[in-house]
Image (cartoon, rainbow, N blue to C red):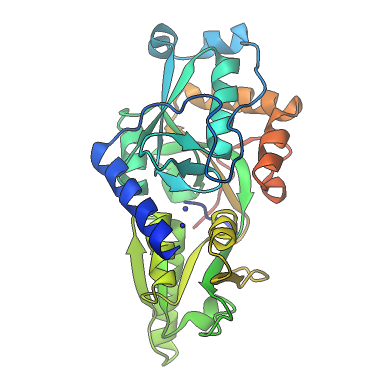
Length: 314
């Protein structure tokens, strides 16, 4: 499966408002190292020594400023979890950013963009240094950006408890209302499926595109959508937070995807690509990456080594 682009009627409403506020501001200040997220997981990671050789490979502007600016979508748990204060960021990617920053001898600042398309455009235009992501790696995205992949994902559905609309696979979505992330690869797959439904004489899929994951999951919880089609890791998180109101569906199906790789994104041919690749490999080799992924329940999504532009056609 190739994909990649993210709590609770009242709680989700709060999260969505927080996300929208972040998008409007355009930035969120760096997370305080050691901060804890709502589940009580500590954001603190083991301190890493700076690798002088890797630091020397960073672009001159980043060595001079001592910073890398990483753009995110504000909410893609358990990789990126926006704090209720509208500023802090926790999750696996936030922890990984701390370790990467220490190895590279710079501070990684987190900035929130208004949706995935804006984030990718901003990286290609040089407004941001990178998106640590993970973001879905596909050939069409590789035309303007390079990917350093550090995750393998799967795409499934979050549905109301009991799966009342019997959504068991992509083929079962004809005539259903399916929420997706705007600009993500799941959006393209579900739109293609809708065309297939019409071609087969069935009702089209009603595709509902949202800017963020909390908005999408809220649509399902409030009954405005029949399912949310997205990456399994964040959907597992949302289901666990839904107090028995949601469940996963279509978990043993390809659902329109082949092998799905996700990773960090940099500008095309940016020198950051190879630096990140080397730094991530170091964190994988010394066990830091494995510990972070295990901490956030992501062991099934790990890679043995990072890769560059592993993704294929979306």
